[in-house]
Length: 507
Ligand code: NAD
Image (cartoon, rainbow, N blue to C red; front, side, top):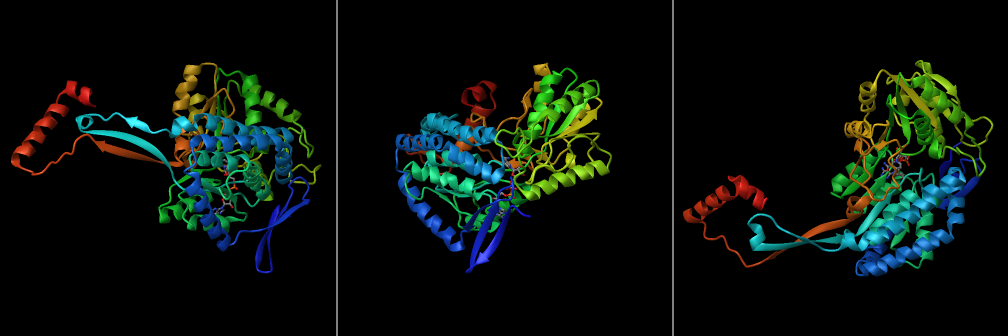
């Protein structure tokens, strides 16, 4: 049985969803048609024109009101998210509600500074001839296409940044979790934000495609590598700027000198949080042979104590999509067929009627197995014994993905050295993941894990066009070109670039 289906009635495309907790029917919503998408764009363009003229102080006030509404509506947000995902209540509160509020307060506090005009001190002789400033202009209408694993936060976080910088947003949430995506629009409506500034279009990939064909001024995409590639192709054809936040296969390296109790805690949390459906979840663990037995024993102890249920206060909840549950099952079966050993779990949870995979510890894995190559996205603690740290690092980098990774050692300078050689967008030392929720820093993957950034000053400013404005100090004419003017330029080049002192002075 599938968690969502598309049916047709009266020439309309209807998205029907069910809860992964127990397959209870959730909603039937009409998908946006091509005409609806075009209309949303025309409304958004008008709304954005007016919004771009609203002062930054007033934009911040709107976002602050949204924060108040989210706080007031938190129980409803949690209820909708849980119904569509089967997440434990604690994860719905921390990942979806807390992170959304934190993102609003963070960007509201910095938006004015980050959007202020910057006076640029020019270098070289140009400094005598021109002045320059860079202004940060909103791009216009931003298309935000999002996945199902963090259905509220992954939709609202880019919206917060793009609205503060003067844009309008059109969101296309995942077909698996449409109502959690729709909540974002609802929060802005309840906060009294200008009409049509934030719109949500419900539907599957077709609506995502239509969104791009309407030429937004930027696409912010979060999802799988396969779809990311299609999005990049469509954006490339239309020359639309885009950022891609894609899948991962994060490695954890447990060094000889690590604190095993803490590393095991980190391993289980990194692997099982959000039932493993976390882009920077820990998917591969490399442990040096000197600490392997200890690490496996401790990891097994913690994993075996996790409570999985369909109740509010479980440790590990549901897999949100039947398709993902099949992938997890396939990866585990493939590993076992190739010689891996299950120490706990290793199957769907037969005691629960919904989509639940048991928290699992699997050992004796190697890189011939899908579980070490492809994104599994399940509550699987997957451990491989290695001879030493060099082998661990070599294997950690043996992946087409490069989102995040984590290194466990009590020697921080060694950890920093290893972190630098990890081929990933970010890395943690003695922590389970470089969190998407650290708003201070840019978040983006290497290799097939992404293009561009979200978050941090870099991500925030990517919703703007940084426009230099050059002011001439006095009109300068280079004409006429003569032998004399050529020689003068030659002499100037010699003066400025042949001499170390002048290079330093003017560089
Ligand atoms: P997906 O790629 O299947 O879908 C993502 C979104 O794209 C959905 O809204 C979908 O309807 C839409 N879409 C599908 N086809 C499209 C097309 N041709 N054009 C435009 N849009 C289209 O991904 P998913 O299964 O929803 O999400 C899981 C993936 O997301 C995992 O790989 C996970 O690692 C990744 N993810 C990455 C991050 C990150 O920040 N790097 C965060 C969360 C999830």
